[in-house]
Length: 144
Image (cartoon, rainbow, N blue to C red):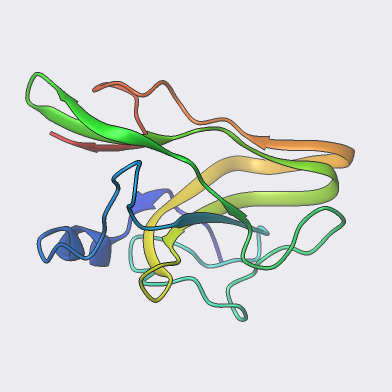
């Protein structure tokens, strides 16, 4: 089993059918779940599920993860992009190898898989997912 960073293939198709609404006001709700190194997540992941996908457990973390705050979609040059504000699980004791961003408004459809590169741990402290700068070169979701 492994976690491979990728935009979900199903998400790419769903963009063309207007399944996902990233509007910062009135758009869909997106969440981020944390996963152990035993998880199997990659471009073929189609949805978040409450079992069977190696989601972590621990103090300060609840199944399903946390709700993301979307940064309004915009563009620069020929690249459109959107991003999220950083997400913190406070007073947590957890170990995670990766994450899944998913659309909880629409059947928990997968958006993308994040691979942290190694296990990341917090012990009775903050576990923060720090998103990159929201610009055409770095935003977590970019369409060039």
